[in-house]
Amino acid sequence: MALIEIRDLVKEYDGRQVLAGVNLDLCEGDLKVVMGPSGCGKTTLLRCLNRLVDPTSGSIRVRGEEVTRPGVDVRALRQSIGFVFQQFALYRHLTVLDNVTLGLRKLRGMGPAQAHEKAAYELSRLDMAAHHDKYPAQISGGQKQRVASARALAMDPTVIVFDEPTSALDPIMSREVASMIERLNADRVTMLCVTHDLQLARHLPDRIVYLEQGRVRAEGSFADLAQDCPDAQVRTFFQHAGATA
Image (cartoon, rainbow, N blue to C red; front, top):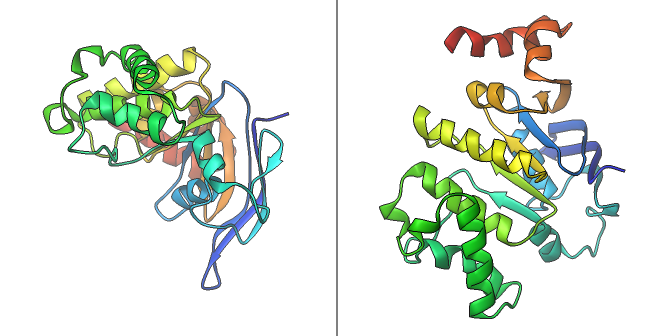
């Protein structure tokens, strides 16, 4: 059974379908990358997954539990989905270490020593041990992404979700983020990554889900979608990465 099962997911805004029957499975240890043109429904899919918006219809199951049903514990659901935001969402007045311990203390009820130990482990895992006492303004964009990822990992979530992880970064920092995601994938961390960055997708393992007009139009490896996909428009979309490499 998949860790996350999305079936026939529909989301409408003012009668317009943004998601038009999405089906997607994410198994333990998977890394799936969701791509597609602007307005295809990528961000809406993520917002439905952690119930920032309610789907119009369809089903989302996390570890077998239907999370779109009335009365579901939305707070618990959001704790089980580690969301790494596009703009990092770090607290500027807190140190790197305090940004990671905050959720552990406030949501998990950990004492300061236990929270410190857990946060220090996750920061060290992402090569941020030397930056505990720095503030977000004192570190690079790639380092902020690692802090945000450590904060998500510290909560021991079912899945880590990345929303456009390289959108605010230059090419060098983007490669750092790709390396970080590859490292987590090697550690069998379950991840869903929404991105428009073809270069990032090209260098990540596992599978890509291509959305268009709110539907899954194709799914496969980057090479399969760029070279062997029977849909010419999908092939063209992914061949752009090779042309700009």
